[in-house]
Image 1 (cartoon, rainbow, N blue to C red):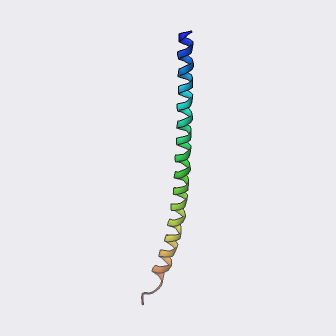
Image 2 (image 1 turned 180 degrees about the vertical axis):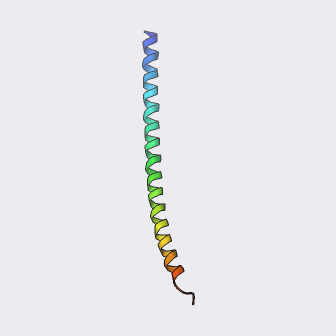
Image 3 (image 1 turned 30 degrees about the vertical axis):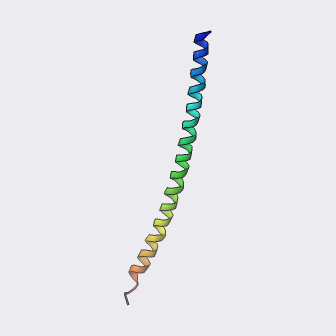
Length: 59
């Protein structure tokens, strides 16, 4: 009885830890994807803007 109770407790604890880890990893991935896509788009826009400014004569 005690062994099965300990085993059940371990299973519950491990499942809760796994769910917490999965949620943390998922939120981190979502944030990373949003940041990377935002920065890549901003970098592309900045690069285009910079090249257009560089091609214009100063003054």
